[in-house]
Image 1 (cartoon, rainbow, N blue to C red):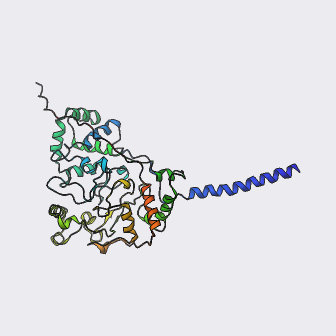
Image 2 (cartoon, rainbow, N blue to C red; image 1 turned 135 degrees about the vertical axis):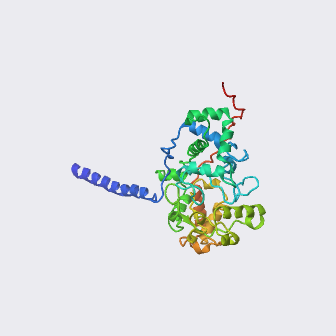
Image 3 (cartoon, one colour; image 1 turned 180 degrees about the vertical axis):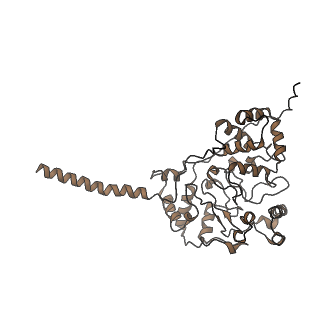
Length: 380
């Protein structure tokens, strides 16, 4: 009799385990395989991250000496107080010009394989160099910026310690800036914690938003992986920047970019919108296409899209729900984007999920920059 009771208890326990075990397995399966939490940032073999290099890069990131006029540091367009980007539709332009694209956040840029809206740089080192030298950005010349660094005793000391430079080498300045930028990461968002197994990291609205993101809304078609981007190029029908209609300086800068990037005479006269990837490929099929941005840290980086023409995350969801928009290059608009038929509750849930991709705001005070001094007299 006792043996029968023991057997009954054992069978009951096994049955209970059989019910619980699938529930645990199903909970694990709820994490969509096409998304992932963010891991540690890379440390490239040709530019390994060290504390000394990062500290030098931090100084240089905030130092206007790495620009043409001495007043356009990286932080001018990537302000810590403004999401590490620029809080207007179009980024700050070099004095006497206007920029012509929205500034993207530096946060988590360490993980990108392509930098800039058209993927023109393949590394943070290359991005730093392009920005410092860009005609409507830093507008610097390498030799002049290098000379300005040489007049700073603290930089001569640090460049020698970090890179072995007798005199600061401006290419090593870009290496240091990139090393600093690779420390500006956020890997502990509610989304990351949820993907690592914490069921309580997302609230109910955010979980419903995640289900929409990977299901009905179809966002995951392009916003996938740990960075929530496939880094491919699409034309979504984003309307053209409205400043080109009224701002004479913006018009001049836009024409400068068209000319500098080698469009034909006909296109130079005709285009009233940013050709995007076409500048790099000169393929008509790439007109109006831009690289898919990461959705991380977007809670703090409004306005959105390559020209800042969408003001809020709610507006972004409305834009996609409507099937995108129209622009001068609508012939190349992606077929992936179509009306979604979301109701107001679904839209609010999707926005709630998008906000879960950002943790606490990352801020930083600008460091005290070392002074310039006359070069020491040569020893006899």
